[in-house]
Amino acid sequence: MAAITGLFIAVGAMIGGQQGMVIAFSFALIMNFFSYWFSDKMVLRMYNAQEVDEISAPQFYRMVRELAVRAELPMPRVYLINEAAPNAFATGRNPQHAAVAATTGLLRILSEREIRGVMAHELAHVKHRDILLSTLSATMAGAISALANFAMFFGGRDEHGRPTNPLASIAVAIFAPLAAALIQMAISRAREFEADRGGALISGEPQALALALEKIHHYAKGVPFAAAESHPATAQMMIMNPLSGASLARLFSTHPEVEERVARLMEMARVGHYPI
Image (cartoon, rainbow, N blue to C red; front, side, top):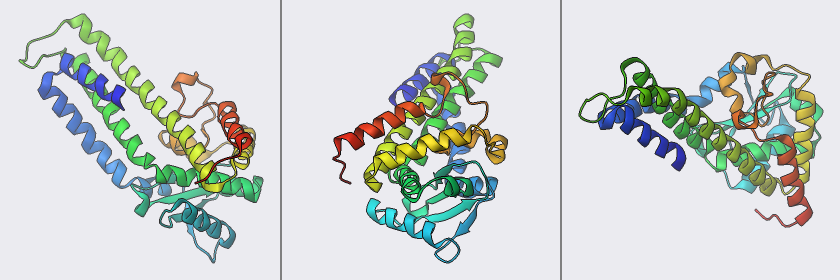
């Protein structure tokens, strides 16, 4: 967050001056505020998620409730998505307005212990307020892109309205959004690692989460996730990147390498001391 904020200040000073920075940041803030406030409703609707309760999905619902108690969180709303691809996500602007969702494919291929590990991972996202953090990083990245577009079409301006070096403006317009996206993706990867750790602490079974990640990775490669392909911007929310064209360089990935996530969890299991 410090890096992306510093990048915004540097780009803003070079391209738009103080006034341009304020305009770009305000525009990005307004856009992302609506995304943050209504994210749960929008995403759940995109995936046609169906809310369940103790009657319609008793075992799954009770599992989430037990994990929420262990995590000292309010009970989130619980959803199922009728998709064969195994995956899960959490959404909601804060712990009091949180929702967790899993696909029917995930419930089908994982054991009960592994499902607990996955849902504990999602509750860790809620506990860490990662939806807020991702919204902040998206706001900064959006503001940087707005400034870059300004430079591309109008050229840079200092705080007195004087044109800046045109070559510098072009370079910033090209590379600043790329740098912002790289930082944003690095934040997403770091939050996944922390949610893995937090999920292992909540469930008390890091090995179960590690096994779940390996299974999801194995099965997801052969099962398309149509809803995620239609809404690729939501891929970063999932416990595993669901996009079929996700074989990009590590720097451009929203999720860490599965092997590294599993290795960290297995090390937690080996040490054997992970109180909540």
